[in-house]
Image (cartoon, rainbow, N blue to C red; front, side, top):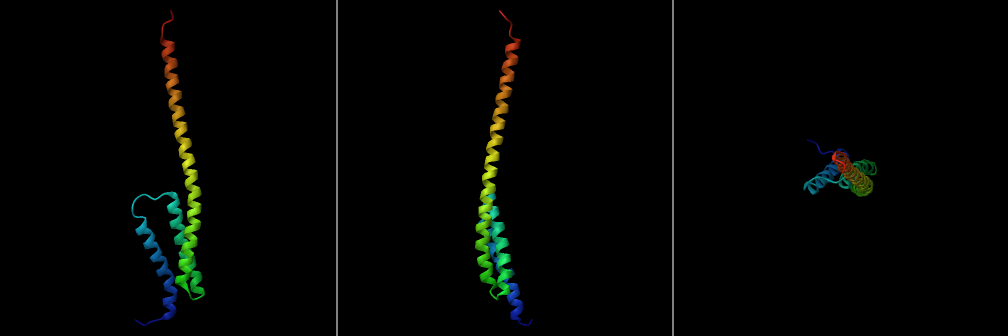
Length: 120
């Protein structure tokens, strides 16, 4: 195999993106990810790829990938945080609806019980 520095530069952005991906996967292997963590991970991957490609154009793919990773993770984390907040509100609303439905059913049973009682 011949050593080709141009080919190495082009591939280093992909190598950097893979390194970032491996790091993220290793750090998140502990269990289920929250929406915030998923957003940060997706942002970091997208940022690493875009940064690597842009960095490749200016002959610094690794620096571009690292800068892209940080910026992408930050943006993805913010977006994920917003989505996580919406999920929390929706879950709380669903819980309240379920509680209200249970109370309604209890009251219906009480009404039926009162209807069945003989009048004195």
